[in-house]
Amino acid sequence: MRLRKQALGNRNLVGARVEQARKELGMKQKELLAQLQVNGVDMNASALSKLEGQVRCVNDFELVALANILNVSVDWLLGRA
Image 1: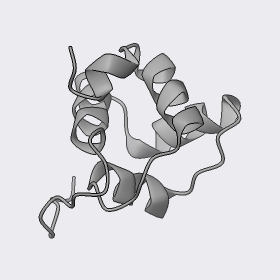
Image 2: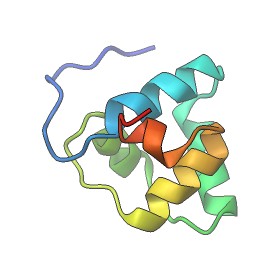
Image 3: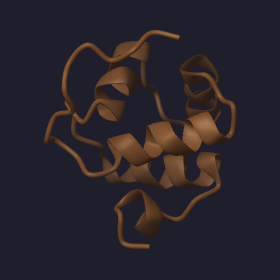
Image 4: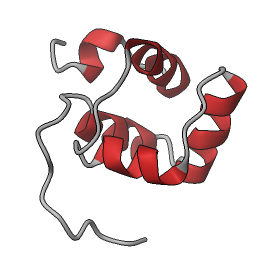
């Protein structure tokens, strides 16, 4: 497992929670990417890494798919629950 070299960015609120939920499920980024593909979200490894690092903005349809795949609410991803 590689550690993040850069500090978290400020482009989204959900990145840290996506990473937390993914790791709690024991899911690798590669597995999450495959699930996103199945759910119609085309994202590459770099984009997911940037999303988790809060360097990339997240689209609404990506947010919904991430919540469904990670079995959490959109509100939780947004830090509202």
